[in-house]
Image (spheres, rainbow, N blue to C red):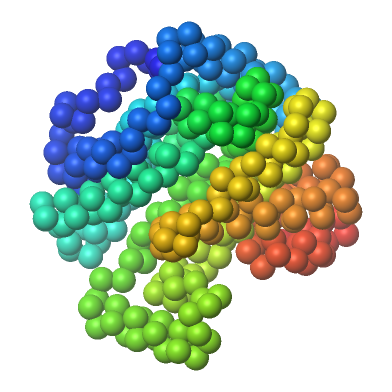
Length: 365
């Protein structure tokens, strides 16, 4: 499954310099081992998957722009059908390109130089996470690609075929359904130029507030334990409890934004799916069933935050549907005008609060 962009873009981590925030080759190796290969496709099957996505992302892009009223002037959407290992390495390269300089700057400010052992441990954690997620992901718009790859959308071929076979979905319709969701993400960022910079700034600010002082870290942990004792473990999100106040504020903004992005894409996919995709309702039910897993796997999903991402789809989609019902798509599109217009996590849960602040007749920030 070849890369449609730069054929010289290597996947060989041995060709890259060692060091940095974590041991990237080790992360890649562990991820590859845990990922497995998934269904094996014949050459004809691979060619058909590649051909379908190449054709359908362009069609989906036209549908999404017409429906949302959002347009962009960058490269048109293009597909890259990859295997699980290629998906892992593509994402690790993105993490390295974006997070390495930000994290290195934060560590330097605190006078910390990660040793080889710490880089190996972090690599094992990241590699394990990537190996697990690579078995789940179907499509992805990679926000932090180099400019020449703008508009590139990933589809993990073995996972797509595995779902089609398991639920007996009509192949071209299921692939169009996936395209509608991922192309919406591409259009969100292509039509809103400030959004990518806003995300990068939030990540940088979050990392700059990493707490290094062991005494303060223990105090945060003590407070988190006390919070759990008072409220019980159910319904308590431990991650924010271990953050500094500044990090909690950034986390809240990011939760609101990610819920908006995922919910908007899910809403667009659902609405357009009723027109352009056969059996779209059954596909939605099938993927919900796929996300339901064993008790052990659900516990792991909670630890890595996978359950949080799933809930973002549902909460965000309800927000978008409620706003569109009240003020139409044009009213919803006020959300893309500036960072001040983005909903907080609380506003995503209560769309009427966002409408009162930003919507027609609201104060707008």
